[in-house]
Length: 459
Image (cartoon, rainbow, N blue to C red):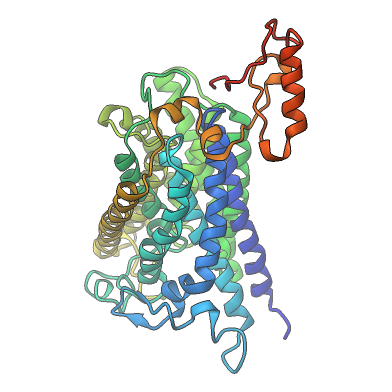
């Protein structure tokens, strides 16, 4: 069976979206302190493994491949293990490619949440949370929006309030992740020194910039992978270029007027805010509207990230300020600037569609937020009260990388500025012996001391 052009493109797009999760690992990793970067990156990487397995076993069936269970989710047994998709009369290579494409959305949604609880979440608890959350929270909402569930035109809510537009994941991905991140941040509580410790700042801005660049690249597959014809694909591509660019300008201008300086960190954050805002609207607005949407999202998120200090919630890496805020802006904006289409959408308020589309968008946002908040609270509290979701104060001060993974990202000992930590003690006895000999010999090179340092320097 020969592949069509659309199938080839969706395979490429799926690979681009999968790359976005390692890109997010760099983006988030650079935003944390040096003693937390490995843990932060590992939370993204384990999401790939855990969610990937869940998706093959029952996730796809729950999100779009299974028989509807009251419009809430698909029957997880209908296509369990992708049964029925691999052979026989129902075999369709295009469906399998789409299964993989959809999996990458579920993966990055889970990974996005991790930024809200940086520096303080047990890795084991996170590894348990990820597959449970994607099953009970992500899959149902994906089914409501894209699988013919509650929010679709034939669903219980969509038939009443109207069908919301969400082309690539404003509600399913960004609002979903933003609300979940906020709930977990409240459950785990604040980091030690939150809002007071000047060392709680990004340790590697180049990592942040690299991550943002790779995310922007992957987002062209994220938004455009489901395009069905060339005109739609072209509009999506232009909008995915224009909105993040405008958002970056908006964020930088906000910093300039507020702080007197425009930062590279702000540029990277603005890009992501614009990408989030255009996600639900990428195929349904004009390029000029995309620019306006990006500009609003960039300014709004630049202001919103400071609310955590005023309101007292520790959203470590601004998942709420960027993904929730810009996700809501992009989703609701469709009520004003959505283009009329032949798919039952009469267009937004500015195109003579009245308030109908805005009402549909608002209902979808509220319903998704309520479902995510309640289910995430139940899952998070259950884990927190049983196995514990947060490391101790002492472990946090020493560094979560060392405590949870027995590794550190950087070796400072050879420069006389850091630890003598050995990443893998079980297989590195020769290194331990060398360090012990250096300490007994009257001074490690460059340290000016008679004993080797054994405690990791706090970063």
